[in-house]
Figure (cartoon, rainbow, N blue to C red):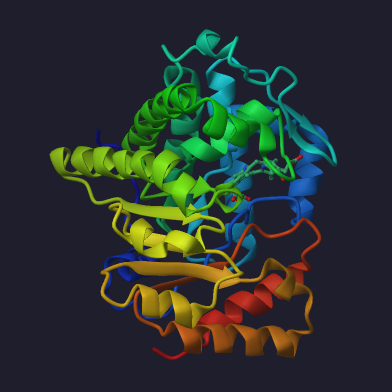
Amino acid sequence: MTHDFPPLKNDRILKAAKGEKPDKLPVWIMRQAGRYLPEFMEFRKQHSFFEICQTPALACEVTLMPIRRYDLDASIIFSDILVIPQALGMTVEMKAGVGPVLPEPLTLENMDSLKKEGAVSRLKYVGEAITLTRHRLDGKVPLFGFSGAPWTLMGYMIEGGGSKTLSKAKKWLYAHPNESHRLLSLLTDVIIDYLIMQIEAGAQLIQVFDSSAEYLNKRLYEIFCLPYLKKIAQALKIHLKESNQDVILVLFAKGAHFCLEEQADLGYDVLGIDWTVEPKLVRSVLKNKNITIQGNLDPCALYAPKEEIVKMVTNMIDQFGTERYIVNLGHGIYPDAPIDAVQTFIDAVHSVKL
Ligand code: 1CP
């Protein structure tokens, strides 16, 4: 599909993802378009969360907020991972101070009522938001699309929201493996079509968020996650090859430090690393893999005094090295992160000589 998008002016992140040398280290922030921004909080007084997600002009406006304020090297489309369960027919509410709530969670009895047919066409507002944002960005920085990973979506669908243990969803893995695989396969199919739709709409990078990987161990991750994550990467790579497009694939499996090597073999170009993992360990485990690393400053490090933030960022970059490296936090930014600290973080990254 041709869109005639404006030419890209900042390709640092694309270069780093491909193993080429950028002029400066690229930096972006997970959840950069969110509640720590006063302009976002103002905007939320007028619009509900899903109204913003579902209205391309509003989603575009929020996506641009952090790009206007900061010298970031990538943007990420404003949406949520839970738009997929919604498109499958589940009710998802965003409760202030609580987060997402699914009042009628998935059960073994109701799982066949999920509406796979037409799910991606019900998400076409995300594609429209991506296309509009690509134009409005005017080539300033590249745009990420994203999806939740199958296991992370399964978790929210069964638990009915966030959970401290994910024990209901994990019960499925141990007691109902066949039904679990059936659900994970369905989600994988929808995620593939959804991400292809985002690529066709203009996403230049795609990140798969497996934020609930940390609740599993290596055995469970090998059985219930890796095959599906691989299927997603392979399907997207085949699509990109056939359509002669170049889009970067990023996997962020939070807490899955028990299988870094296995993640590196799935077909993604970049691995996101959470804040609990030592940079040197990551580099040594992955030294023979051609893969770019993204991460991993503790989101809470932004509460430290300015000089400390600069020291921690410099130290992190020393340890990761500047090759094949994209700087980010090791999980999403918190709503009370000081906005000046974000500036300090970005400046500290960009001041490193390559
Ligand atoms: O009222 C509000 O404004 C709600 C706050 C909010 C925001 C700003 C939620 C609810 N989602 C979002 C946006 C969002 N979610 C983005 C936007 C783009 C950006 O990064 O700037 C993205 C990428 C997400 C992805 C997301 N949603 C993830 C994966 C990333 C991660 O942090 O691990 C997850 C787990 C969700 C679920 C979700 N949505 C919202 C909340 C508070 C949560 C987490 C709930 C929990 O603790 O389990």
